[in-house]
Image (cartoon, rainbow, N blue to C red; front, side, top):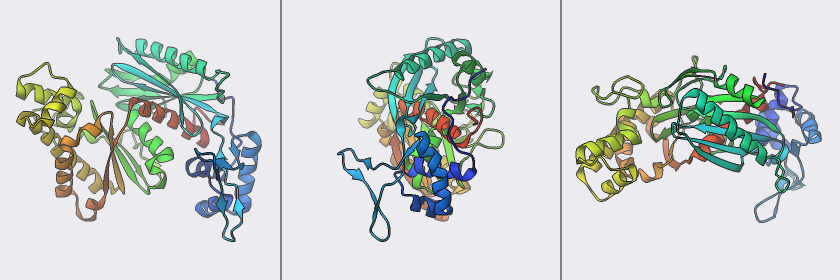
Length: 403
């Protein structure tokens, strides 16, 4: 059986979890501000922080900016204080992202800062082969933690991000059309190989956790992350939590039936957003309409930028459907911000205008005030998201990282 993390956090109460979460996501932060933001007394904050400082997870030593300047805060009476911050190297985490063609792995510190990166190509995407390769990749990353020239904290767990329907509670990939997997107990099988706790998550939800704890979502009341690539995914942060759904499925924007019904999706259903708006669908459409089957995505983008009518039509069609899907999602849940992300989304300025037009046409009332932000992500960011899910479970004491 996988071992428990050998660096347990000294958190005995919900107040302690809340305090550490504030320090981790909003630090450096003075005790008095933690008290204000949590509603706890300063005495309760001090009581929760003391064992964390003693164990080396948190420090009140002055932090430094990149230029070496100390970060200090001021109390209302003008007296400088040393804010609390997490000690990044107090623990280490491994994050793994699985795609049909590649495995991407990173090691991170307690603040989800990436320390090491490894990429491997996949020739076989069968579960047995991928799990064996994941174990090899994780083992290789574990070895980097023992580099004496760049010491890292103890490893507390491994996160795995996979597309599709993932039962995160039991660590089972129930259905991943891109991988061709059904009911694969990834956490149990990989945990047995590595002898460390393993957390398996839907990849978009993992990316949303990273944005919630360490990105744009830190100061947002609500937000959504919409990812556009080989598929179209959506993660939601609403009412103080990343939405998982009663059955582990939520935010499946790519499978809203807003596209023509004659188009068959990789999931087997008809008319899904992905049949028009995914990068694969856009490329397929341009190859078909131009009669150029040799085109790759970069060539298709270049063709559209040159003004080719067929290529422009494919991107306009994608923008229309994405904008309509975004409006439907925003009308339903009302997020403050939508981050539109993906490996090459910054290159997709071709559909940005049409997407925003369609969104404005279909967003109801004040929902149209939702901010749409384009933001490029790399596969390293997806792997970092998997690591962020481990950090969150570690702080909260959730299985398999229970204290």
